[in-house]
Each structure stands twice: as C-alpha cells, then as structure tokens.
Amino acid sequence: MRRDRNLTTWALIVVGSLVLGGALTGAAMWLSGSLEVLSALSFRHRDNLWLLGLVGPFAGLTVAAFHLRQRASIRFGKAAVNRTLITGRSGVFRAVRGVTFVTGLALVIVALAGPQYGSHTRLLRKRGVDVVIALDFSKSMLARDIRPDRITRAKAELMRFIEDLDGDRVGIVAFAGETMEFPMTVDYSAFGLFLSDLGPYDMPVGGTAIGRALIAAKQLLERADRHSAAEDAEAAPRARVVILMTDGEDHEGDPLAAADELAEAGIRVYVVGLGSRTGEPIPTYGPDGTWTGWLRDENGDAVTSALTAENEAALTAIAEATGGRYFRAQQGGVGIDQIRREMRRMKQEEREARRVTVDEDRYALVLLPAFLLLLLEALLPDAWIGRRRRRKLVPQRSGAAKESP
Image (cartoon, rainbow, N blue to C red; front, side):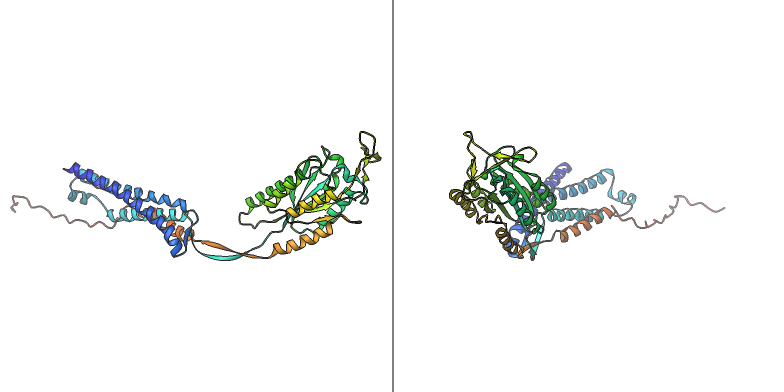
C-alpha cells in the first residue's frame, strides 16, 4: 500500500514538473509575442526564452528532495520521537530557499533574453569619406603633354589633395597590367611616401587594366568597412569614393562591367582623363633615371599615347554609371580641384546629423532582483535554531514508599 502511494507521488512530481516547464515556456512566448504589440515589450535574444522550460524540472527536483527527506525521517523513527531529537524548524526555510532559487533562475533566463521596453532617439553622425585613388602607372603616363609629365603632375596634385583631408581615410591602387595596393589609412605622411617612391618602372606587368583596378579599389573599401564594423558595430557607414586617374588606354578587361559592380555597392567614381588628343611619344629612362630615348615598337617607330575621343567616352561612361563625374586634365592641372569641390559637397552632406531610434535595454531591471534572490538563497540557513525549551524532569515515584525510621 505504501509502495503504491510512493509511486503515485513520484508520478505527480514528474507530471507537475513537465506541466510547469511547459506553462513557463508558453507564458514567455506569449509575452514576447503579444506584449510586444500591446505594451511595447520585446526581447533582443528571444530564442533564449526556451531555457525557461528548465525551470520546471528544477522545481520538481526541489519537491522531490523534500519528499525524500520526509521518507527518510519516517523510516528513521516515529514522528513524536523525531521531534524530540531534531533541533530547529527546517520545513519553512527549505521551502523558502527552493522558491527563491527557482524564481531567481527564471529571472536570470529572462535577463539573458534581453528584455527591451521603450525607446529613445539619438544623433548618429557620419564619420567622413573613404577615398581610394586608382592611379595609372603604365609607361604611357611618362608622356610629357602635361608638364613635367603625366605621372609626376598627377602625384603633385594628389599630394595637394590629401592635405585637405581631415579624418578621411585614403588608400591607393597603383595599376598597370596588375595592381599594387596601399591600405586605407589616416596617416597621410605614410601615404605620401608610398606615392612618391613608386614609378611606372616599379610595376611588375606592363599595360593598362582599368577594370582590374576598379575591382581592387572596391575590395579595398570593403575590407576597410569590415574593419570599422569590427571596431564599432553601431558606427555609421562612411561614404565611399574612387578617384580614377588614367590616360584611358585600356588594354584588357571590361571596365564598364566593373563600374556597374561599384555602383551596386554604392561607390561613386570620379574619373580624371590625362593626356592630349594628339599623339605624344613616350620617353624611356635608364636604371639611373637618365633619358635614353623614346619607346618604339617592333618596326622601330616611336610609340605615341593620346587621350582620344573614344577613350574619353569610355571614361565618361564609367563615371556616369556610378553617379560620379568625368574631368579632363587642363593645362596646368589634372582636374583635382573640381574633385575637391565635389568632395566638399559630399562631406557636408555626410556631416548632417540623422536621428535613429534605439530600443531601451531593460535586462538590468530583471538581473538585479535575480542576483539578490540567488544571494538570499545562498545565505538562508537550512533551519531556524532558536533556544531549545528545556523539558522539566518530573521525578518518578517508586512503587514502595520508603518509611522514615
């Protein structure tokens, strides 16, 4: 009979634990769904709410431990005898400790779900502009139709350009048949050293690959964006610009298709065409930098370089595909002043503040009482031990009274 009663008790404990866990999980899901609309309550990490289902088994274990203690006491001896041997009252304190622990555990799980209530607006400012300069370092850039030559004049104008940058990151893609990169930086002096030390004869492969240079510039900007996101996830994205400076003589690839990829990524391309319409011979230099003559083809004729109308049309199409503009180098300059004005307008737009709505995290309001409850559970004793009331010993009278002599 007693065994059947014990089996029934254990079955009720298991069923009660499962029901309690399911009820808590269902209540949490209902809160995250219904109250989110009704009272603006939401959860940042809603998937963590399933852990509330573990609270029921914990509560069941607490009840089971109490039941096992009661059974052990019964097997030890009669209740009246046990009461004379036990000091303190433990039942109430154990019940309080169990409820406190289960409640604190449930609140910790709710805090892990990241409850949010209410919101506030704040100003989020743009952080400047990322600029990649794609500069043509093919040997045709040594032509002297722009004094002293195309590449030297372009470098001088770029050095003036970076002096006006203030907190804007700048990188460079030097290209001919292949590309060389200098990563995004705000160290303008290091950028200037790299730019000044590089020349057309340092490029490993000759030719001009504009499309490859544009893709390399896009990848350079994307790597800088990932680095910024890793440092500050809430930082506003920077505007991205590529300044392409070339004489337009593309020998391979599809630069217009590359421009379409940049346009999809939101990157604007400003193009500067370097050179004149008339053919200009390309000088050659020895290892010590002395002029050795003119570049010639296999027939011995001098090779000339010109910014033809066809090349200008291709460069204009690249700029317009990305929302940028095309500038042609004029006498005494290479179009950087016009780009500088465009950049100033862009930076002014980027500096305008925009308001964003940020949800208020309320996990601390739940985590604090959870910590206090768990601390209280650890500090509470198993029983209250007060002053034991001493029992008065009543002397027993013997069956036969002693007679006085």
